Image (cartoon, rainbow, N blue to C red; front, top):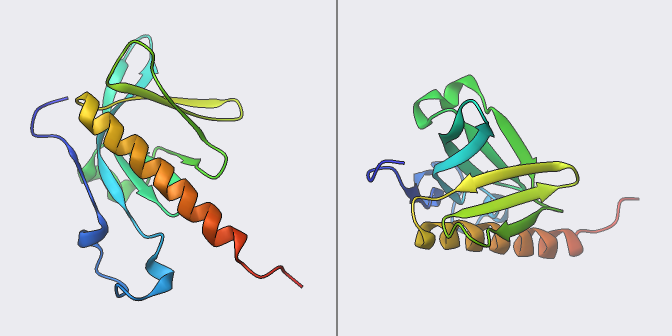
Length: 134
């Protein structure tokens, strides 16, 4: 990952909704470049990653967002595991699906983990107080 590629809080980049609007509570919160393990032939590939609503999605690059995401994972039941030896890596697993991700440095890894975990807590809180369907 190059030095100029990083993460950013994406909430400031959103043009819809107001700060007081509860519908914008789970808008894009975090986005940036992470390396994602693809396979043994291609190895780690930089991907544009977006945390939005209950989903973590990735795109080939920020410039190619308009072509749609390459993959997404629901975070409501996701388990985030920092790697034991690689201080830049963390894994996200849901059932049998696992994403292996690397940040550019340990600080960015922790910022991503914190953002995902905080999002999960907020999502749980919002779901817990929704009225039951009749």
